[in-house]
Image (cartoon, rainbow, N blue to C red; front, top):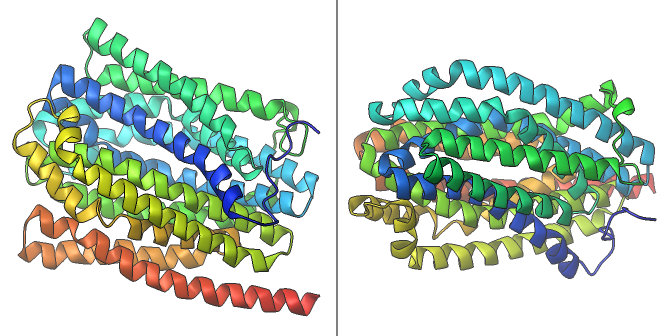
Amino acid sequence: MKNTQRLDLCSGPFLKKIILYTVPIILTSMLQLLFNAADLMVVGQFRGNNAVSAVGATGSLVNLIVCLFVGLSTGAGVCVAQGIGARDQQRVSRAVHTAIPVGIIGGAILTVVGLVLSPTLLQMMDTPENVVGMSTVYLRIYFAGIIPIMVFNFGAAILRSAGDTKSPLIYLSVAGVINVLLNLLFVVAFGRGVDGVAWATTISQAVACVLVLRKLSKREDGCRLELKKMKIYGHVLGRIVRIGLPAGVQSMLFSISNVLIQSSVNSFGEIVLSGNSAAANIEGFVYMGMNAFQQTAMTFSGQNVGAGKYKNVGKVVRLNMACAAVIGIALGGLFFLLAEHLLPLYLKEGGEAVQYGIDRMTYICLPYFLCGLMDVLSGGLRGMGASVVPMIVSVLGVCGLRILWIFTVFKKVNTPACLYISYPISWVITGTVLLVCFVLLLRKRKKQAAVLV
């Protein structure tokens, strides 16, 4: 049958399948980051460091507002994966036809929130006065086009849960080319600034949304999307919320801690902010390379749980942890070694801003693999349907520790380095607790399955 899942995720050997499944996710994530990188590079080269600061200052705020509904897309993906594992096409179909309307409604809510609250939130973050106006313009345009971004995330989550990771990659490749061309058109040809790159991102993401909806409408399995069947099924929504809401809340709280850190970075002034923004964008490529294995662990675990094959769950999570560590160490080390050459791509004036970027990468980019290990464990737990546990552990271990750090240690040692070192410390503590939770829960689920047999 056409358009069925590409890989059998419930039988070994798993390493090759994990790699085949994950590589398109990595490339897709890298393309999404290239959207932001293209924005920063174009405005940096043609409009200066102030424009880089203006766009960079919006990153943590965008994540704060958007991540709740992105978390719900995670819940939708798990529901689809478990339905596929159980070979229940009706269950899969209802999850699909609930997920897309939730994405549309979520996008509409975010549009209103973003348009109304952007200036207030930027001021609360102590965004420098000379960039707050540009940042507000960027945010308002971004949120004006947030519905297609939300729908794409839900649609891509559905396709990946069905084993199709290549289609989202293709669609973002198309959108990425459009984004770069529009950046150059609006900024270079038309002389626009941050508003030009914002419109380029919005338009290109709308193209990706249309393509993913078209793909879903042409499938011939339970993932087929039909407009007349779009309906929010209460019991399906409940399950999506039970799995996805904790993930979204966790991401929101992560973002709150990042907003506090961003506010602390902002307090050091424009030069530190621009160096921090450029370094953070480079580090994002390392993170996305590792985070893809979290998504893989979640999907593989979800399908194997749906099929009742709990013995496979431990195997796929261990393999994903190993892969995430390799990617994190390799990319983190490579980008750090090349930092002096990469940072000037964003920072036309160079100088102190480059050194501040290198300082950040020393504390975050090099040990980033620790974050990858933590995220894979979190994905494995969610794949088993346990989303509250990683939320609580991560909120306390990552968000709580960083916030406590800001108001205690950082208050006494007021330097960027002191701020950045809170990241690897929080990864080690949180990852260790998540590992214990994962082992205990997997043992419990295996015993429960043995009793049922």
